[in-house]
Length: 283
Image (cartoon, rainbow, N blue to C red; front, side):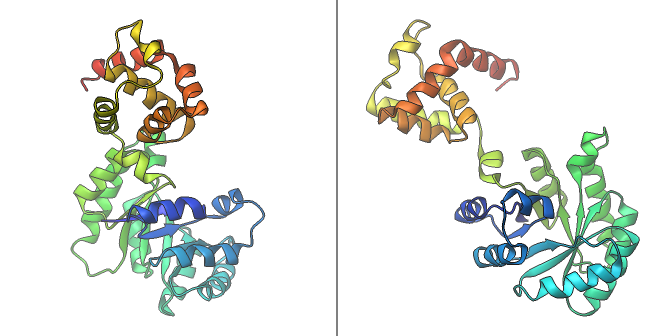
């Protein structure tokens, strides 16, 4: 299964590429707007220089003629640009036209297997069912994904199933189990998918065993120093600051004042509460 990133942040894309999981990128006008006053086509071109795989550039026109015109324009940006069209009547018309000309199209905003069939018949290179948005309204987005994969299986359609709007690691795991071709994540998939309570704290314990207690030993002694308490507090601090747990531990050993302040602000009581919550959940 391939990983596509749903972001327009060049830093996030470079970071994911370092993990070897930036197989492609999907963007939309809102994501581009978050990057500030950037030129749309120049920004897409910059992404294409980082990622060799497909990079989706979304049409903003509401009619087929406008989408086709934008598709022709965007396709000139780089060879790996994919045109993103909505799963509307006009979007399907544009998809049919563009795909007949050899331009790849990612049909987005799919919420039913019937829509997915129409997209495949129109020649879509990718179909993007939105799992998380269905979960948000009390439906099961994974059931939609399973339906689409099963419907596509008997036919020779070339449309790849792209599990979009993934909100958690379970979505990613189940998408892989079902045989989805691609899973889309936001800009920080390495942290969202790889983070586990036992991994970084275990590594932190090795560091503490080798180098001794952190400069904040005194904070934990009043509740009985143990590495799990320390690790839980560091994990809470890392979540608050957006850094990794190991980065926090290393920063503490180096005596970085900001790391020390983050640790103190979390406090042992919060650390213990986190431990209790993990214990209740059976971890």
